[in-house]
Length: 389
Ligand SMILES: Nc1nc2c(ncn2[C@@H]2O[C@H](COP(=O)(O)OP(=O)(O)O)[C@@H](O)[C@H]2O)c(=O)[nH]1
Ligand SMILES: [Mg+2]
Image (cartoon, rainbow, N blue to C red; front, side, top):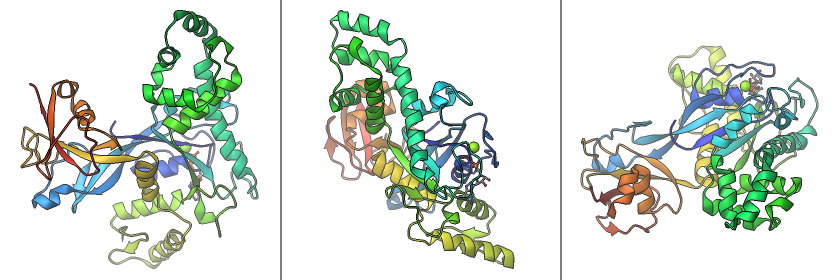
């Protein structure tokens, strides 16, 4: 699967599968009862950017994603993580296997029912505004406890060996959590952000939880997504930093676009062609919600997740610095989402390990300037890597 991965996580019935469908137009099941989604659903959504092919006066040939009217749609993987209930990290409900999806996610959209009508066990309640904060805390706690239990399993044996090995603690802990794919720099940042016992054998439950918390903070941004905004007259009095959306209306909008009934260019939908009265009324109802200033469109949540939270930028590697093509003549075949601060050498390694190893120099194809291996790239850069064959 392609691009960065975003996991949709939350208790049953908050609308994860609806949001997943709206994003991917896939076929996740939608139902008004817990555990509709038995297996994690994985799909693709797109992050649009202005495509540089426009300045060439030609059309690009994307290997992944697509390009339409000068907009390049870069793929992003979305994972619908089912069945998180209180106690899941201890194996309750469906158990904690599904939490493995967190391992794969670069960012987590913590979905909650902003209308406060879904009780903790997923059943429908009428008045539960107070549960929002505890709901968010519950989901966070389950994720953190789950990861803490992953670290602490087999700890005594690990700790005795590591403490007596004479290896640097960083090296030991890197090996312990290697399956999480956290870079050495980030593990270092986690360790120095808290006060952890110098000897591993002295680590307690609270230290594992602390490590887990910092791991999310530093490596996997958790973004609060309040769903079912269409049921609200005003924003709920919780978590001011959360995004408020309507998965139901987003799904209706994406299906209407697919059927050619509406255009969805700006914030609201525009009727396309002759529509029946009922259809026009539905569009009006959707637009009334989309145009509230405290309601966010789903695609803007994704674009904030990519830019603001994951801090990614788009870089285009090419083989020919004049024509912006690969060896086969495909124009701008790749658009990679890479972290801010990515260097020319990082890009070379992303293209291919051999290209990274054989790195000689890079060329900024817009300016024709040579850039060195440590040169940080900028958003939208088109780069030719020159490497030893
Ligand atoms: N009013 C309203 N209902 C929604 C919204 N999103 C989902 N639902 C409903 O909530 C129920 C559960 O949705 P589902 O996506 O299956 O939740 P999941 O268990 O988190 O995957 C379904 O009846 C959906 O139609 C929304 O934005 N507004
Ligand atoms: Mg579901």
